[in-house]
Amino acid sequence: MTTAPCAAPMIEALDIVQSYGPRRVLDGVSLAVQRGEVAALVGASGSGKSTLLRVLNGLEPFHSGTVRIGDLVHRGGGSGPEHERLLVALRRKAGMVFQQFHLFPHMSILDNILVGPVHVLGRPRDEAAPQALELLARVGLKDRATDRPERLSGGEQQRVAIARALAVEPEVMLFDEPTSALDPRRAAEVLAFMSDLAAAGQTMLVVTHALNFVQRVARTVHVMADGRIIESGPPTAVLQAPADPRTHGFLAAEEAAR
Ligand SMILES: Nc1ncnc2c1ncn2[C@@H]1O[C@H](COP(=O)(O)OP(=O)(O)OP(=O)(O)O)[C@@H](O)[C@H]1O
Ligand SMILES: [Mg+2]
Image 1 (cartoon, protein in one colour):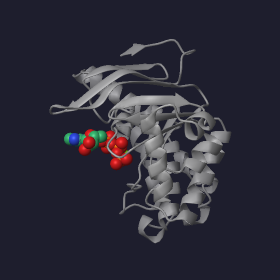
Image 2 (cartoon, rainbow, N blue to C red):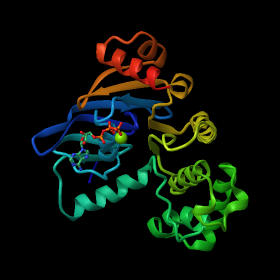
Image 3 (cartoon, rainbow, N blue to C red):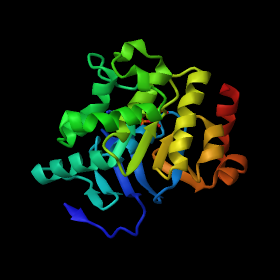
């Protein structure tokens, strides 16, 4: 495990390359997210957004390049026990929220949130429970602790999934289309909580089609196409006056789909 000085960005990807068979899904991706910054990642289906997020939190091996999350440095192509320890450490630093919540169906809401503190951090359940309940209150679900996930709406389940990711106090949060499976009202509730998180200074990288949220909350938006970042900048510039014709095409398609 190697470390880097802390003054650098909280999330950094340098020249990441990943292929499936002959196909380069990430073709030299570089980006940086500063401490406390909310960055959005947008782009057409298949452009590589989910693959990049999985690479960032150590869920996906990659061929070459370097990922840095805080002081942890992950170089592509690694293997062996030290590498495995690095991946576990990376997943603690980078909380991930998926489109399909992925809660454990046989566990109560409270136990879902306690998975990280108890099984990953090794804290006693009794000691970790009050903090988990506080997190549940923060996402507006204090009175649902004993319910199973199936009793909750999609939006409520997603807020539990966010609370679960936050329970290990990750340095950065990665969101992969957290509202795509939700109806507009439920999506708005989840986006409102994400806005609160952003206002509290959480470093976040968010893959989303919710361009109004990007416009309001993100400091930077990165646009992906064909495994590359083709354009980056403040939402006002990128979303209103895109420089790359592919960004223009993506935005026109998003507009037509609304
Ligand atoms: N495990 C895999 N094996 C083979 N191909 C894969 C694998 N995972 C992803 N791909 C391919 O890599 C490309 C990028 O996929 P990815 O899921 O990262 O795209 P995306 O930008 O997140 O798309 P979407 O907006 O539809 O979620 C796609 O062509 C996909 O089919
Ligand atoms: Mg995806």
